[in-house]
Length: 298
Image 1 (cartoon, rainbow, N blue to C red):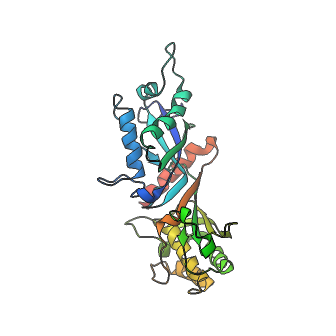
Image 2 (cartoon, one colour):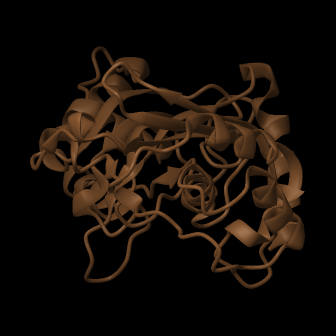
Image 3 (spheres, helix red, strand yellow):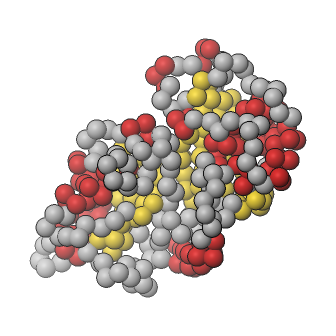
């Protein structure tokens, strides 16, 4: 986007979308031919909405979630032309209320893509200058839910909570999590992708037992590699079951290679809950730095 808040590709304005979805019915975020994905549903809805103002905008997301992963705090952006803005709201006296038009986008998308109820745009708003949902993000935060007690295994939440047959050692798992923090090569916990880096900064990793008895892992990093969260949580669960020593988890990380000493956990217990961004005046610089780093990584 340029200094006036207009997208560089000639579109009139960038809109930020805050959304959530139940990942159980989707084959991940990224569009794939013949498969239902979150991006595919949203972009199909935009195509319907802007059928007379083609081409419809694409959707850029903060973090592409895997098959079956949920989100309550996902962030995306779309670039809208003036014609598309006018489609969203009628102009009066030759002037367009741009902000009101963009606010209405959430309702319009929910009326098309949200009919099944498993994806919902919570809000849409005009993005500040320099905003980029993907490259501007400072961190992503995930939660993983595990019901390791019979009384906490609520069938109503089975689609977002992993059930385990034995109670886990919370203190041991927290000890293992503490040893993973910081800037490291997490290749041991990532599904490899050609030319992609596995160096990440794990900013926080905590375990708590909620009032309903469910264990919740909360992880925050500048970015996560493919399957990284589920692998980190799986290693801690192996510790909680007594199959790994807490210190062994950091040792596996330092070996920087895949291992069979723990299992990568299923996707349905994982939820993207929040994406963090810098102050508005720092957005453009942050996005530029991240783009440059990704170009070197990839």
